[in-house]
Length: 123
Image (tube, rainbow, N blue to C red; front, side, top):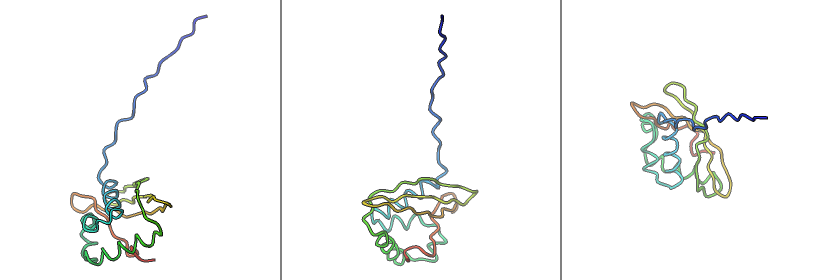
């Protein structure tokens, strides 16, 4: 008896290059975790910056972290659902506990930027 074994090539799927929405969300949350308020503010959409000064944002960002109830150490963007020039990024913030969040990401000129929710930093 002759056994024939067909070898199927195993190749990795090509790496997908992001459009920038996922990367913007990662940069934003990384800055929040590091308490780098100016860097997190840079990633905000211009419309959000018009509605919230850097000083207001810093106060709200500190409150956002305090509302987590634990010291965050990691951020993972689980998914980023894009629809044209809008996207929703779903993130998990890790540490002694975990917290799941979502943020609106919008195209602002040629770059993706965070659209700050009116509920940001508020309970």
